[in-house]
Image (cartoon, rainbow, N blue to C red; front, top):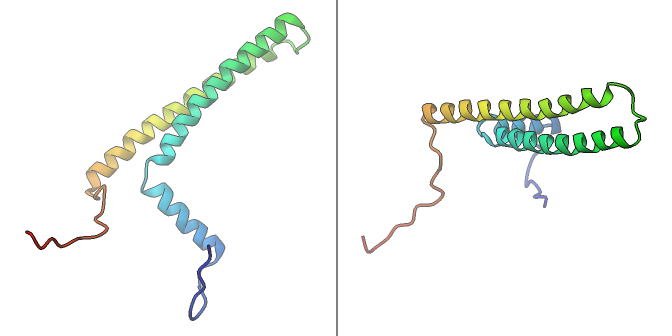
Length: 117
């Protein structure tokens, strides 16, 4: 949906608009941190499934490179743990910042006058 300007041309480039959007999304919200936490849980689940598959493959065929399976399983698992840790710590710090900054958590969009009082 595009709205045409009545007069003039915008001075914002696509790069400037992208930077403005990223600034608004990342600086005033803890949602990206929650995404990191959820992605961490996803990585751990994928890591456990990959570990099961790699162990079965190693035991059944025995053709994988020596040490590869035992190296990949902890790397995948600890990557998920790191993402969860970063998300939890970041969410804690973000919620502390929001509560201490005094920024209202909601804004009033419209005030409706009631004649009855």
